[in-house]
Length: 142
Image (cartoon, rainbow, N blue to C red; front, top):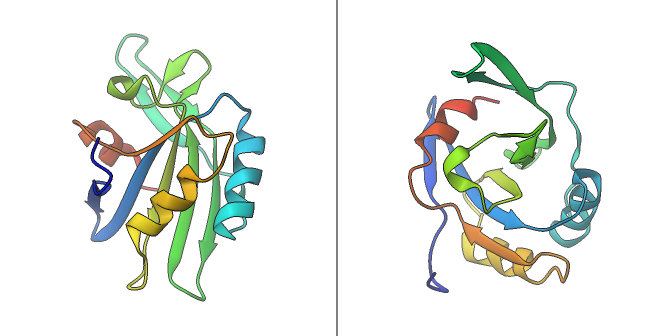
């Protein structure tokens, strides 16, 4: 992946989101702690869950996530673990342990965010989300 690659910008209900995939073998609360320290944010476990319909079982599965909604600078940060309860949130992104999702403001520099993510020693890999993530776009209506 090119060092100048930019994360995919999704438009979901007229909101734009930047998405990075993270490969890191830690529990979600530890990853949230690392992101909080490096990005100077305050991710907290959300009271809500992301629903995903499982075609095989015919039932919804629910995925926990962390969030930091910042009304003062019009940004929102989300950390979502890709694999929960032996199911993948985004099945075609099985190598990614987490997704860091950012609703950016006009000052957001996606390359600077990626640089900060990659500077966290515990993160094995941090890449802009790529490939067919339409599945993710349909889920991210947070």
